[in-house]
Image (tube, rainbow, N blue to C red; front, side, top):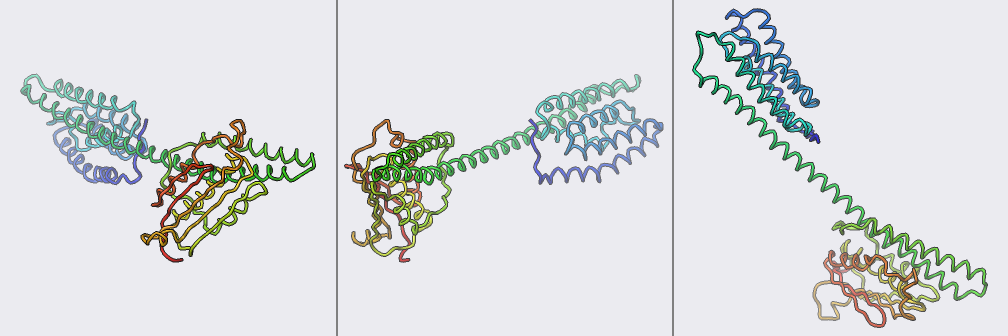
Length: 403
């Protein structure tokens, strides 16, 4: 896995800029000192070319960390092998710091498979540097053993320190990637949950109305052909309901706290009228003066009415009566208090529950009432279900005063 670097990696850009402006003068001064110390042209060219390559790799490490590291490692090999008068090793050239930048970049954002080899390469370079420095020493001018050991230990500490710091940064970047993926997955689950609720609230409700209206029309017709056609319409709608429930199971996800598109209270009469047939009597009664409601509370009220009607038409045999009651004066009748509106959706039980084998009356996903309850509670209201001969859905939702 390669960790994608941030688009705002200002610290890295600043370090590369500093390496390109601060280090070259030091390297140039070193080349002048080498020339004055008697270094030949080959040595000067080798050090100059290696230093130039290191600066180029620091600049190219952002888009191509692997290639930059390989080139930087080869340049460091050249510096380690080129004899430098008065210096233990060419790796102490100021431009060699570019290798540390490239190492950090590869370990921090490069492919996983290069993290450990990068450290092994750097450690091998330290060993090569110490060995080459020791072999170049004249036999009559050997330094104390602790000096090359100390130099190798310091180089090793710097290399390992940079590598460890880069690993920490890599871990932080990986956590950020994982957290971003989790947020994206949560957003997708939220979207799927919203689609699921909308499909259930809108399409399932409409298909249930189609079944109810087709069944009611069959009762009122004496023509066999028309009755068969209406029966086919009802069966097709039931099959569509079954298919929809299967799709809802595929889209099942954790509920979202995000608000839905707010249905309007002005649509309640049309909602009730659409559900009314000769076999299904649905009425709407509103008492008191309507008041404004918060958007989430208004959405919860309309969805509750829709769910109550849908459940009655789906699970109860006609003839059936459903009463929708919206009471704006409930708190005034009970001695005052905070402004609320009470809504009840109550069916009379009809001719009894539908048979278990009837596709139109199967239990379904069970998400409708749960979704309605979540909406009411999220809007700061209270929700209850009462079972008698029929079912009663009852909720109290907050209002914001007179409209």
